[in-house]
Image (cartoon, rainbow, N blue to C red; front, side, top):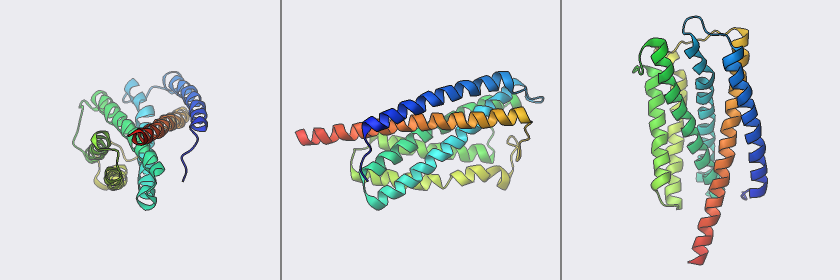
Length: 226
């Protein structure tokens, strides 16, 4: 598989960024001006509209990292490594947002920053696994051996995603409900926020891919000059 044109990638990146920023502007307006205040938890419940979409976007990105890592181990082509690295790194950012917004919501809603319940615990383990991936890529040499180790780690880490998603159903939870009931304005706001955050994740992903390809070009030129 050939690396995509950086010019075409840059154009797509700009278009997606503009769309993502507009979508998030609309989503934020809906969160604070359109969606009603939840009766029990109050205004802090509005974190939900970005907390859950951030989690779903993080899941989608680490799933892409899983697919691209498998393709890299199979094909051994650098383009798949760049795609896997980009998806995992941006996915890690969104998983970090989940672990930041969750305790803020929990402190106001339930009086505690952190509870060692199944979903929170498995989510922390997932974040730590991708943190290990991030640190491995950050401090390792840019060689095929390091890339293969990182790909294996990304594949293993992804298998924790279904565990996090199903944790409440399997083991119960003192803070996470099994089912959330939303009235129509809340549903519309939630799905708008979901689309906006997914677009934001796509924009970050395209930027990271472009940077990854540019880094590969720089390293290739440096090797040629040696």
